[in-house]
Amino acid sequence: CICRLPERPETQVQTQHVNKTLQPEWNEEHVMRNYAEGENLEFLVMDYDKGSDADLLGQVVLECKEFDREGGFVGSLALTDCGKGFAATLRVQVEVVRFTPDPPISQFGSRLQVTMQSAKGLRAADWSIGGGRSDPFCTCEVEGKPHIKLETNYIDKTLEPVWDEVHEIPNYEYGDCLVFRVYDHDRGSDADLLGRSIVLDGTDFDRDGGFDDELKLLECGVGNNATLKVKIEILPPLMPDAPPVSQPGSRLS
Image (cartoon, rainbow, N blue to C red):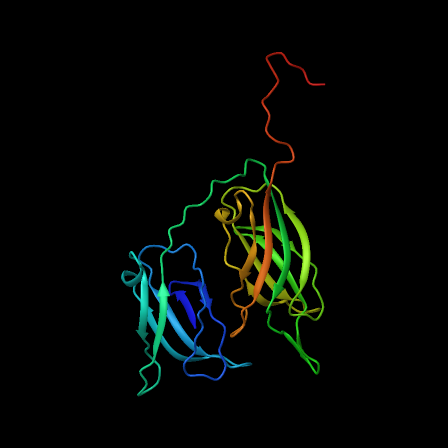
């Protein structure tokens, strides 16, 4: 099952697929960030097909007035486009959770220490007699600042890479947002995208304790539930602010 805000496809979350059943039970909980008042939710139930596009089994839109209220929404929804003569339903629970961010700890000249640790559940980009593998590497970029890009080494033939590489971004500015992407390294051709994270903003890491958790990857292949583990910490400026010592008539030596 896929859930997303129709006007913002990057918010998409999806369950794992359940084999050979017409009455699947997922019981999975997902978090959709930065919800804005007035946005509806779209649900799509898909049939997972390894190696080909997923087939639509049914869909439904849940209007915001049904869940953006005290107690949220719990119930069954009638699916459309589910096949002639079928009366399929989808049971969901949706709750709007109020969020108060922690106060930021950064200051002018602060740095970001970014550790790209590991990934799991990646799709296979390369196939051979021994099975499917990828040669994954990870990047971290500051949105709107294309000149800032961190990148790990690639690891040969694995779907669960462990990089444990520590990188630093100097001169962090409050409001800078980070996005992570995992690629398959291909010598002599463009790298293939294996998945990307949601956009992390300062409320996620510019706080005491920083950010140390797994991120669900988007665009990671139908039926895949890939994750990326990262750690982000705010570091103090290399030269902290200090009051000036000059006075009229001072000299430099």
